[in-house]
Every structure is written in structure tokens, then in C-alpha cells.
Length: 178
Length: 301
Image 1 (cartoon, each protein chain N blue to C red):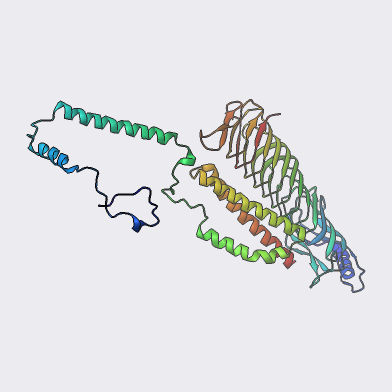
Image 2 (image 1 turned 90 degrees about the vertical axis):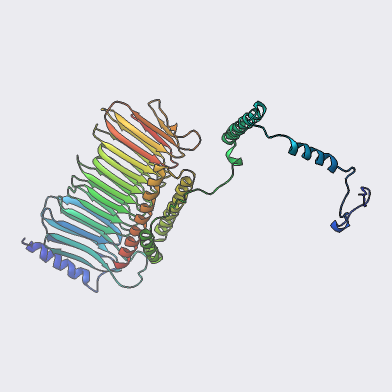
């Protein structure tokens, strides 16, 4: 029988002993307890002591639930588990809008080229302002998806972007046609 | 309608002068055509300037100079519509050659339509409806009882007047808007242009900006309504409302303040957002203001 030698350095798992015998034989005592339990008569009704254990268990469970609830309420957001939203909310405009927008964007470079450098710079800056605004609103909606103020603002800003694209394309077109 | 014989002769003579190959670098024009007193006058000019004024004659007169890149000035009438159009020569023109400076006089009740690219536009003394669009040209106009519909990309607009009940619709991309002494209904949209409006009285107003700021000062009758929305632009309203006013202002991350001792209150204990709903007197004018991150200030003095 191998006994562990704590003074010996172990470099690999294979160097560990395959089995270690307990310092004393525990089985006789366990067998004696099992035998006495099997020979005991069945209880006709729950004893007051057993009822007491059940009630203690239920009370402990309720207490644990209560503590858990309180802990849950007081957990800072930063420590709260990050879970994906149950309902995926899309803040992207519909397909017809995307098509109309793509058509306007396709014309835009040629139309911008027809504008003066200063107008072109201002138009691009305004389109960038709109893009940033849309990002800001979408970000805010990410924090508060049900916010009606933000929802209407998002729709209005999409419309504003379309108005600008249409205006610039018409303006560039007017400059070329004249 | 009979055309003025003198006008025809004068127009023909000037047209010949304009089209003459011997024309100097700048060609002078002076042409007249008979017109309906309440017809439409359409003016198109790419660059230079267009100055329009209303008068009490039943004719339209165009005077001015045309740059050497201008092929001709079309000046025609079809029914009740007079068309004045600067036609440029084909190809790339040296800078400044395609300009035309026009002074147009027309019956004051005419409907005016102006289209310009970089030409500055001024319009004065016209009571009919004005529809003016520029790309980068600046616009100065007096609004008559027929109201106006104005559109600009980067040009600034300075507007004044506006009779009781006149409607003004103005939109820019980056151009600033200044309104003075107007009345009636206004509808303004801009992305990054600032709006400064001092109105005698406003019946209704709808203003939307993305990043542009709004400063509005107006008398508001008790039936007036004002709807303002900005994304990041600040809003400063001075509303003289003798019959009182109700204010509903919402901001996601901006501040809301008034001179009535009330401020915006958080809409949620944990999240952003402020709202102010109040009445100075029950009933009265109705102000609704929404912004994402702009600051809102409302006062009555």
C-alpha cells in the first residue's frame, strides 16, 4: 500500500498514487447504522417532529426566495447579467423607403458635382449631421425602445433625410438643365 | 389679351441687340411684354442676381445685363404665363461668364415663380403667391397676402412681412432663415440652418430642425398652435400670449426651462428624459416642443 509522501515533488499526474487507503476502516459503523434504520417500524402518521422539519424547510425556502428577490432588486445594472432582449426591435426603415433612398443616393454624386464647392461642402455636412442624428436617436431608442418621442423623431428624421436628398438632386439637376 | 405694340417693338429691338454677334462682353437688355394682372411670371437664372418688384401696370419688364456666357434671354408669354429664362451657352464657361443680372417688374398680384442656382433673389411689393427656389443664392423677400413657398439648399433667407392669414412654407438644408414682422401660418424645415423669427402675430407654426437652433418671438392669440421639433438644436421661445398658453415640452437629454418658475421634470426615476406640461392660464395658445438633446426655454417676455 502506497502512502502519499508530501515531501516528494510531483511533476506529472502519472506520478500520483493510484489509490490511497483510509487511515481507519469506516464500513462497519456505516453498515450498523443502515441495519438499524431498516429494522425500525414504519410511522403511522407524520410526527410533530417531521411536520416541524417540513415547515422549517418551507419557511427556509420562502426566506431564500425573499432574500433572492431583495438581492435581485438591489443589484446594480453593471452586475446584472446581460441578456438579449426578448423581442427584437428593428429601427430600420421599410424596404420601399430603402429602395427610394438608394435611388436618390445613386444620383447624388453627379448632382453634388453640379453644385459649387461651398454648397457641396455644406450639403455634405448637413447629410453628415442627419446621419449622426439618426445614430443618436437609434442609440437612445436602444436604451428606451418604447419611447414615443424617439420613435416619432426617428421617422421624422428619415423623412428629413429623404427631403434633403430629393432637394439636392433636384437642385443639381436644375443646375445641369439650365 | 392684346400685346402692347410698343412693348413688342422694344422687345424685338432688344432681342436683336441681345443676339447680335457684335454684342459686347456684357449685353444690356430691356424688354417689356403685356401680362395678366394676376397671371404667373416664371423666372429662371443660374447665376448673378434677380431683383423682382411689383407694380401697378399690366405688363412685365425685364432689364439688366447678360454675361458673355449667356446665349440668350427667353422672354415669352403663353396665355396668362410669362416666362423669363436665361439660356447659357453649351460647354464649360469661365467663372462669371454665365451670370445675368436681371431687374423684373411685374403686376403686383402676379404669382411669382423663381428658380435660381447661385443667383441671389430679392422680391418686393408682390401680393400674389411667391414660389422661390435657390441652391446657394441668398434670398430676401417681402411676403404678401398670397403667402410664399421658399426652398434653398445653402442659401440664407431673410423674409419680412406677411399679411394676416398669409401662409409661409420655407425649407433649407444648411441655409439660415430670418423672419421679421410676419403674421399668419408658418411652416419651416431646416437641417443645420438657424431660424430667427420675430413675428407680429402667429396663427399656427410648425418648425423642424435637425441641428439648427430656433429663436422665436411672437404674439400668440388664444387659438394659436405651435409645434416645434429639433434633434439637437436649442429652442428659445418668447410668446406674448395675452390669453395664456399651455406648454408641453419633452426632451430626451436636454434641459427644459421657463420664466414661469417651472422646469422640466424627469419622466423616469432611472432613465433619461424630461417633460414639462403646464398652463399659464386655462385654455390659450398651444405649444408643443420636442427635442432629443436640445435645450428648451419658454418665456412670455
